[in-house]
Length: 414
Image 1 (cartoon, rainbow, N blue to C red):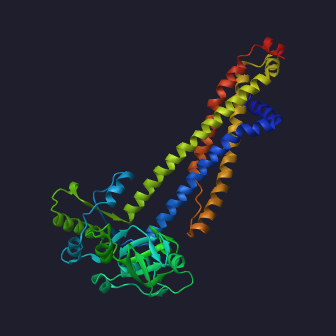
Image 2: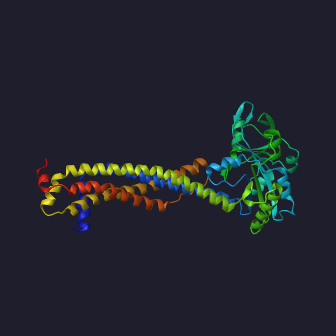
Image 3: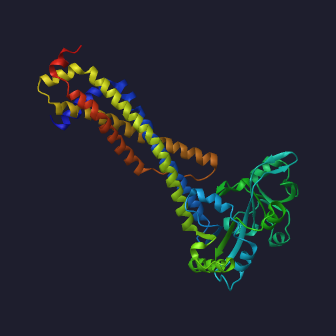
């Protein structure tokens, strides 16, 4: 019996039982759709973050405290490290130490909320340099102005707030010149940032910027920084600038063995690699969890095929009586199983693409970012391959059971 004839017979059998066939492939469709959506959303997120990091400029360098994390769980330890201090910033600012350094700005994360006249909101509070923030992100207050270096030196309690923070605390009222409370301290609002949405690591509308010196002395009582941002004089100067930074900090910290560094340096490419690695791990983890549904779908295929074998016992006996071999019977039932899962795979990919497009549109509208749709070709190919494998693996047993039936017993079956 030719493969084409076997395919025709198997397809006719499935068409005769449309409802049962449709219910059989439902589990496969759900599994493949989920995999496609997860991979598409993961790739979209990776593309979005990559674009945001790239838009910052290739001349940026980040210095992070603590040892370089080797896995996602190490990032908490890094955030709690206190190895970057004011004397390190002063040493890096000397041209004799780091000739290629153009600008430098330490950053401090301030956990907590802000309040005004009984209204409370929990934004992202950062102790930073207003001028540096403007240069890097090209974002300027739509009302008021940034605090300057004089304000930073004088530990002034000034704040530049995002548009969402302003709306939550002040509504339609004017916020410039008013005092907001941060950790029981009054900060005068001097500027309001536009609602630019999400950029790289934070939402501009939900940001509160204050002088980093004030954050340390007035709010946290610390003498270290959570991060240091640096711009190099040019992209070409970055490698030498990184070497100079490393040498300067090692001298400041008394480190002779580079493996004992209590800081690490990131560039744009380092960040892109880290983001890609983390998202790949998350996508793979979620994909493996979703893949369980394919196994469940495969069990469903096997159960339905076993029921089909029982129902079609007389058909099997008749075919054997007119010359069909065990191999012919096995191939027919295997073909039916593969066709079912293949159809489920194709439909799963189609639904996955549609759902991914819808998810992309929703994220773009709700989050307010340019979230690009990414067609997961690799996931689609993998989905089809897995679907075909499921059809073969879970179709073998029912096919063998059908082939083993005795023609005489099958013809007598009622």
